[in-house]
Length: 105
Length: 120
Image (cartoon, rainbow over the protein chains, first blue to last red):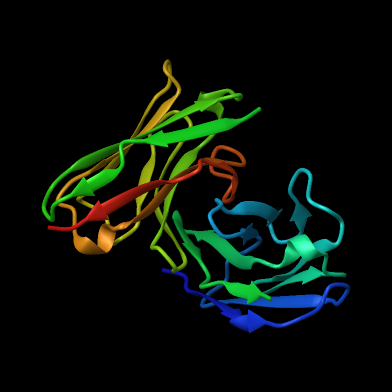
């Protein structure tokens, strides 16, 4: 099983600041790395798929990058609605897994 | 619009069974893989199971393999998860999710979630 480790656990920032979230995989995941946003009481929302592709309707301030085992989600300028928990997720060898999440507060 | 609506959750005793259903609409069901993901209250997300668009290929997390069975009823647009021999650690909110493709490795749409509580 591929383990995803996200850092930091919590990111304390202000609106307008840049957020950089990290996700490290225990083995290569190719390009099958996605990012989700989750707010309290809501289902996760897909932001980025296949490392760097924005999902439908996702603002351009969200971007993804990385390869092999190291991936990054960047929010260029935080809006008030961006304060939430973010999860990375991968699929390798027909097994899917999530990171433990980063809270942006 | 794509919609996924789960049902079938509730309280069950350890060792008991429960069947979750997810009725979908707004897309061609047979074209997409589907999955179940759970979330322990206050904790993170855990993948449970996935099934291909044609229903032939199914995959399970180690924690549920042999106890849970995923299936799909294509004519009626229903995804199901049969959960047997339930344990306290299966207590979670269960989400059904639509894959981006037929196993595209990410989920574009999610249901609202259904709570399963395993307790005596």
